[in-house]
Image (cartoon, rainbow, N blue to C red; front, side):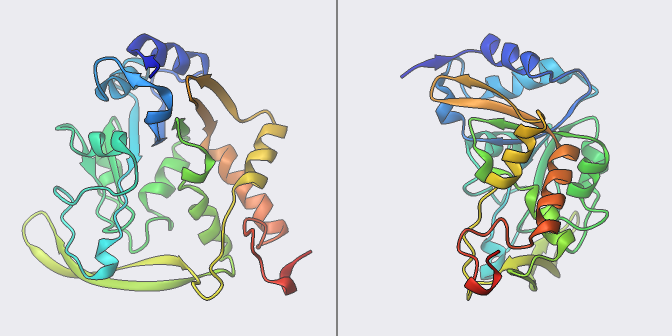
Length: 256
């Protein structure tokens, strides 16, 4: 298996114009970048060395067991299917985690405390941590992951009230700072009767056309970056033109 070292990651981030003070929303599938010399922690070390003390890293730590009746403890509940790097960051001693029991974020750095206090009923609404990183001008960083991993498109879907999703409330037991409480959160969930199969290809194609999507190939995958503001703007425009555009199996009546 090919290997990847700390210096390669740092060099790639710098080539992609990641700079000191940047905020980064990181999605990862680092197995495609090769065997990390020194372990999985070299990715965090590389990022922190580039963005410095004034930068912030954010990773998704989603876990949907709360929707099935399980308790949620921000300190203990693991992320699921978010990749080993996201779980590594979640377990880092310096990490904080947002409170949404299904769509949480773990964060380290300058804006971590700002983000972690944003406890909104849904993860992508006004005032949420996702809304805040958009407001702060964070960048999207894909470490080996492809566009299918990008969670920020839910932000645009929710703002546009896409017709293949609907609001659903979930109540359950959550560990707060001092006790266990029964609380209710919500998600803009997929309509399972429609079973929409989603693609972000129209959004990525528009970003590439605008030269706002930047990528470097490494071993079996790539490292990619984009301004979150540009991503959301492109997604908003695409969905406004056709609210079904991200659905591969859109109903016949909604085909243009």
